[in-house]
Image 1 (cartoon, one colour):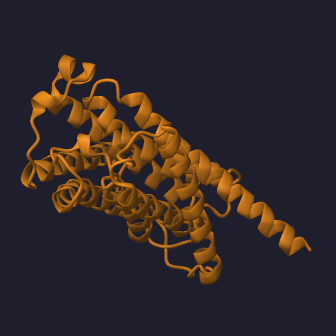
Image 2 (cartoon, one colour):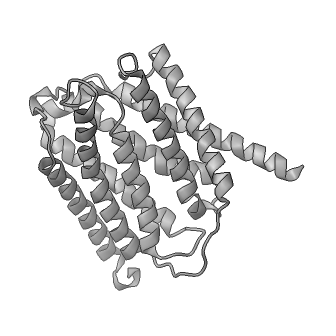
Image 3 (cartoon, helix red, strand yellow):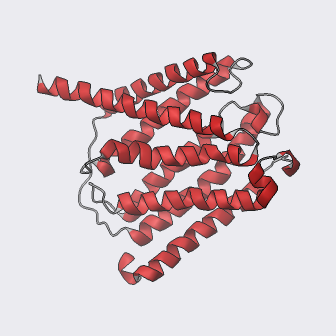
Length: 283
């Protein structure tokens, strides 16, 4: 498919896909049940530009990152599979970040006054409104921009992956709980400790899963972990978290802090596990 377009045409097609996906996300948010009062948003960005403009710019930036990652790393993939399959893996990874990330127990960032079924339902639909467009976007971007052919199937060691994911989840859980207890990370842990622990563990498993799910693409890259953890997962998680900071006054530093802590912990956990694995194989 990539050979059918000139570089300029390809750029226009990609930009159009980003814009259409952003419109789809905005439409989905408007369609799904929500009881949000725009007057509650008091950030300097909302006051200066208005909520619709801020939301639109947010989605354009978020989806532009998803597009750039899919094209750049997809075309350099160590495994030769179709562009659609590469797009699906990246798209599913981003979609899961939005679905699970939206469930973080921060009740005051939602129109619901307490954690419970209403909160979970509301956050589920909001996450779905982000997840479906990004999955659609990455599939289209992969199909148009990546000219890979089916050559071989990469085989993973399932047991090693399970252990890898489990250790990452536990590390994220321990770090986050320390952050909750010390007040470094602000959420509703004091009111809802069990839901917070469950969500944190689930989120840790998600980060571990995404790492092993897309890691085969990066096998032949010099800075593999930097590309996976910081440039792919990290930037996307930071942008996603920043939305609350874009619409609520004084929240941005906390949003940046919690997402940065998650990514740094993930990076050092992966590096430690790899060092242990290398030493064992050497011995």
